[in-house]
Image (tube, rainbow over all chains, first blue to last red):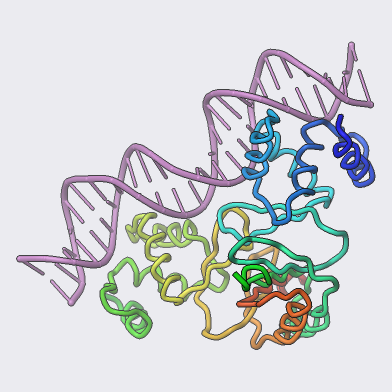
Length: 145
Length: 145
DNA sequence: ATAATTGCAAAGCGTTTGCACCCTG
DNA sequence: CAGGGTGCAAACGCTTTGCAATTAT
């Protein structure tokens, strides 16, 4: 097992409960996600692994992502219709800037709209459980290009 | 052609450009959407029409919604993964409260987070083009039940 | 008339699942 | 050795498309 995989393994063990095994395939998925500057779909992750010569089944990638999502190790974003994108996220409530050109995703630290959400909901008798914000635009790099 | 369809037809003609025909099927889709308190998927709209005895093909519903979306007559929401929801929306920038239990969607008038979005983006050299907010929770009715 | 639109069924696509084999603990 | 995990292929659910028949202008 490589050094990179060891570091992912540490992340894995820290975040997952018992009964879930840190298998080679899951570590590879986690490793790929960690190396990804943008977000990635299950199929993209699978393709990256095949390019690297790793033989991991597509279904396994999907199953790995499902486990990681359940344990909140990765975020599932829905900005491409019809397919889900995954991203290794920092813990805690936060939102994203998504570049419409290169699909780079950047995290915004902190959420300043909780009060607005709470107030606005109140006027509708609505009880907010969670909210998502997605800012779409151009990242610094794509803006320059 | 019924009276209800006549009123939808007015909406249709006001909103659509030339070369697009206000056919019976498209009017029916628009009419269904207008009568829908919640948002609806293409399949749900199709089912409603069949229940009413209207013989409209599923593909036609999809095609009608595609046209309506292009002309910005309806909004496409992505809160159910794997399928799209459609809703007749008021014009202008606004956000939604989505009930996780009954899928009712309520519009919030006005958007109070533009300044936050602009500020937060600036610190990342990001150029925001648009943003979406989706507040998920329980509506007043479901909260009481 | 003629160009857009419909309906049906088939094809596409991303995702999930059944099941036999494999591996981790 | 027992129970989770994997791979493959088949199954799925939503959406799109090809094409001949139909309809609006």
